[in-house]
Length: 518
Image 1 (cartoon, rainbow, N blue to C red):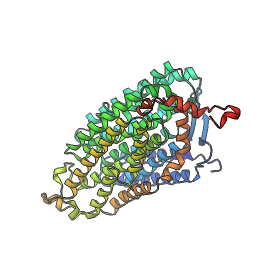
Image 2 (image 1 turned 45 degrees about the horizontal axis):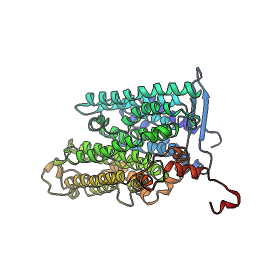
Image 3 (image 1 turned 180 degrees about the vertical axis):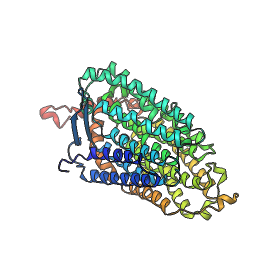
Image 4 (image 1 turned 90 degrees about the horizontal axis):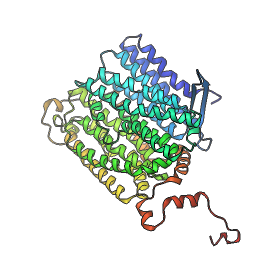
């Protein structure tokens, strides 16, 4: 890259455009926002093209001392790269999705989205502890405004609930960060990832970080803010909330909880498994009885993110890779499903499933896209979610067959509620004349659904292009946590604790001439 500060550029482009949006009318604001997000997408493609898969773990690093020892330090590994690509890919689609549906205070709406793009990229690129915290928490503000100003009838209640849930969890994380910096003497995240905190301290630190990341995911039982936020948010707000903001919780586990507190992560692995199993089954059953399309997809998000947490705490390569692939796949598919809801909501202004039916007759192109994303959501082979869910379940099977069984039951329930939704919307008798009179996709709607459809199929057919950039980083993380890996039911039954096996792999014995026998 010749020393070009590409990460800083990706932070600056939407921020400058956001300022410009405050001083122009609605139409120029839309154009500026779309141009800025497309420019950032181009920078993201450039970042991906120049990422050296076999190179150093941390690349494109930028560093500067700002004030009072505060470090402006950016850099990415393969994990952060893919989440940044997901963010910049969805943003122009969100701007296009809001092109006609947002008519009041358009400049402020576009500015809020552009500021949020800067903050999302900052979360994944930050390499200083407090810089990460600023980006992580500041991201609440534009989403709070998007829900509270441009949301539905109960938008004030939903925005306050969203803000308070996520903020309260993060206060404990800030206290833990202050203790960590005092103990380790650095705010550098890569250094802290290799620092060995005392096991007793790890327990409290892990719980403090868990309070924040569990709400962000969200995990059961602190998930109740999500359905309200999704239902009240405008379509684009739901897309970016499900597509990127939920992934910050998973990213937090990968970047902080697992490498910095491996012993505590192993200690609490079964707590995570228990909460995840409840979430997979319970929220799937709740989704099955929903009459509001957005609320159904919101509950499905909780169930899918539970697959992420069990994969992460499987402490093996398959589980970690599967969790990352589920995050990426879910980011695409859930965003696309909310866009599909938005398409028909813009025409009929209702999300009630019973108001539709038989849309495959008058909206065949829409029904085709909706079918693809429905099948991807339930993990059809050849689509994005299949790869991640298969890897995550393969990883957790090495730890517990019972957890795997329960999570697989959740996937079966997922097929039930998604197919039931599709059947009621796309097939059946057209009993409402206004729904039967709706027109099929226009050019703008093609432009927002077709790229995601292509990405979903690409990820399902050729997952190696997504696995390759993060494989080295996942292996490094697995090596870090392997020493503390929890003993699974299969290992306990065989009398071969995993911890001993991991140590044997990490430090094989040598006995001179007897090495062959050993």
